[in-house]
Image (tube, rainbow, N blue to C red; front, side):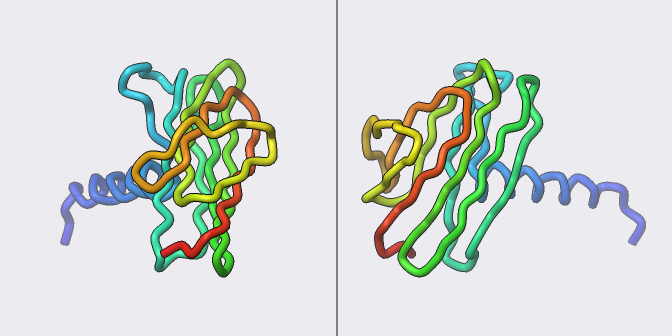
Amino acid sequence: MNSGNHVMLIGDLGLWMYEYLAGIRPDPDRPGFKHTIIRPVALPALTYVNAWHKSPYGVIKSSWKREADRLSLRVTIPPNTTATVYVPGANTTETGGLQPLRSEAGATVFEAGSGSYAFTVQSALP
């Protein structure tokens, strides 16, 4: 097999990994990663994900780890940018002082400015 198109398939897989599993997504209403949407999907078959994206403003990081009935999510938002963070599950705490805005489709939603944040979910996760 000598097709050059297979490179495109790998590119789609990489995009799926950081946009879906790690949840690092551009905001279609504010393009260019000035505002980022972090909405990871914690698949039951995985125990952790660690990803980053180099945006025009700096590196955006998202990593999560599952241990027993706890999910830990860590995110880093670059300087002069903001993010909406969707933490999968209920009973979410955040160690940096952020207050949850709302619950939506099985996630707790936070608005975050630049910086690093750690979220913990205590519940029976899938």
